[in-house]
Amino acid sequence: MKTILVHPPFGLEELTGESASMKEVMNIIPPLGICYIAAYLEENGKDVEIIDCTPLEMSYGDLIAELDRGQPDVVGLSATTPSFESALKTATLVRERLPESVIVLGGVHVTALPEETLSCKLFDIGVIGEGELTMLELVNHLEKHGLKKLSKIKGIAFRRGKTVVLTGKREFIQDLDSLPMPARHLIPPLEKYHPTPASYKKLPHADLMTSRGCPSLCTFCDRSVFGCSFRGRSAENVVGEVEDLIEHHGVKDIKFFDDTFTLDTRRLNRICELFRERGIDVPWSCLTKVNLVSKEMLLMMKKAGCWQILYGIESGDPHMMELLKKGTTVEQNEKAVKLAKEVGLNVRCDFLFGTPGDSIESMRKTLEFAKKLNPDLAHFNKFTPYPGTEIYQNLVKEGYEFDFSKSCSQLDHGLIMYCPEGVDQEEYRKFIDQAYRQFYLRPAYIGRQLKQIRSLEDVKRMWKGFKAIAGL
Image (cartoon, rainbow, N blue to C red; front, side, top):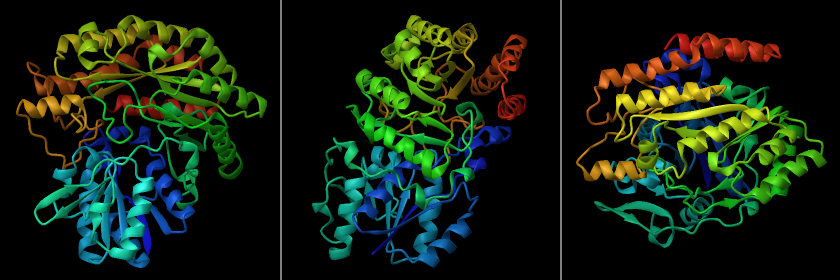
């Protein structure tokens, strides 16, 4: 039985919408989720391929032609909420061209909305939550029984007549070291991808996931796939993947893509120690929370090669921080940025505009706070009520309805899915665009960035960013 896992076309138009000038800074990175699933299937003797459309600039026609060539028994699609429209288009074409293929949908969208997603009848099965164990059991089952007796498989959704059946949650994988490394050999070379210029110093660049699960309770964040319980790979396992990336993929820059990379301090200490012991000399960056760092920790990270840290700041308004349930304060935000600067790290901060309770006044307060923090990079996110989040559930209870059959990228400021009560939608849209200009086009900021240029690559990255901001 042959399985082809597909990362459907999701190009610049879907990502940026009316903000097409942002195309130079799009974050096009390998789909680690399906790479892990493919590796697990391959390790267990299954015939599996991956088609990642975006880096190859494949159209839907190109994709279907490639699937027609491969004649898969199972087509596995992966979709987030912003890319769900692409999954719908792909599934429609697969139904027409390959009617005998079983279409399986995985990812955060179907996990958060299984009944609604499966009711469209384009997908035969939805994989709910982590996909490795479930997909292997599912492929084994399909080989023997086809689409019969599916209720025996944990962690899926399927239709039985007009009813969508949920088979119950599968337990989370506790020993992440038991999983093989992502099947990067099944996707295009890293040179075909282009991470956002703000996230790397050198190319080729690679992203790693060293843990799953985030214990934070942020109301705007979907934790439906990996849950709230932190599970980390061992330091030795993580550094082994780093060495493999350097040796076999020529990687010169790494980003640890975990939600809270510094949560397990003992593991972090060991990773940094192994970097030094093994002479690993590649710059790396990570994401974490402001209450999970100290000056000593940041200094240790810098000595081990860390050059940038990304904080989810979200707001400069104390009341909004409480509503978002960040578990952090404005004062902690300010302190964490200051500490990172003191040890010489590049600082990147994410902010969020437009959640329930926000106003133009509170958004202005956040923008002014961003200027006060003066990080090297600031990203101002437009709020989207993603399924699986507490905010989404509350809004639905209040009577809001959302159509996710159309792309809803955060970078498309032309599409506003939710606007806070009392805020004019057009004013909100203009505010987000202006926030970027007000932050990045300050003379003092431009001067500081020019002083930090150390290479031609720095010049290229800075120019791409400037064009994107100027063209908003």
